[in-house]
Image 1 (spheres, protein in one colour):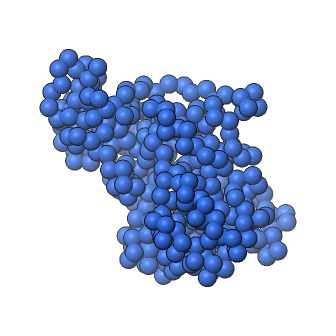
Image 2 (tube, rainbow, N blue to C red):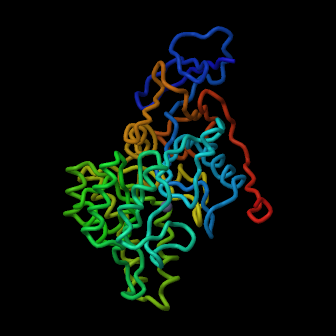
Image 3 (spheres, rainbow, N blue to C red):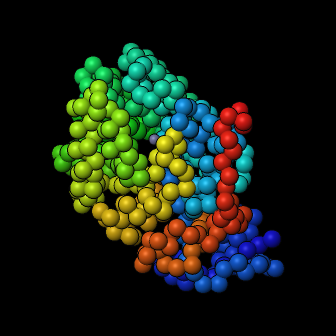
Length: 369
Ligand SMILES: [Zn+2]
């Protein structure tokens, strides 16, 4: 059955009638269409540019749990996910039309003892270039390395990879036609990797002015994951007893997080919304991430960073234009005026199918194994 909607379409802000037929948006009437919205606002489907649907605290979640995570994201308006590293292979979601589209980056690549246990493929620097090729072969155009983590011998954050090894790994990714991104909390790793030609930085709390200027010039984005940065004091406290330098370093990065990201915004560094859901961060929090980003930018920028601009960056530029795949979210009010509107989508349309928000029960992890 075809759908008919009359609403204000963003980002243009013009009122329009659209029809949805066979998963595609049409600007010409479809016969026997059911009117599902008259008034309200439509936004190109939201993007969570840093999300892990299959992650739970100790590693990979059973499929039923991962699916429930993805449904929580979808009902919050997230119709496109960039999976910034995974503990397993989530290509199975591609067969399920009810789930958000996912752009995968393979498994995280880290070094032994230098990341959370049970998450990443762990290799020594000598194997990094080869591992990049392996992960690239099973990804959707991205690979992800851990750029820095606590080094227990140093007692503080430190880069995982010698600079020449990181540069060779980035060059390898580019030879294979994929982009590389990196987890970076501290100052050194982001400075090193940006100069080595990386394509994106996750978190980026340690980016200094010089590095941000290069990122602006080369249009290298940061996905700051503001939602997860709120947990830095917890990470700091967990390290305090054994690693007090690390603890105070994390608190300092946390204290200036809005300043750092405001500077990135003002310099023109591309910024995109990502919640870092999975593990400790719950799913379905994209609205909160948009609000946190708006705190150091503005409503329209933050909306674009979670919708049309993020889609353009990820080469999934579905909008509400005639002929586009029908992936959009309907709201009663204007999110440009009030971002709280994002908390309650009326419904989402994903691949042409309408889904009303519902309470998603997360299956018990142990019993669903
Ligand atoms: Zn993450």
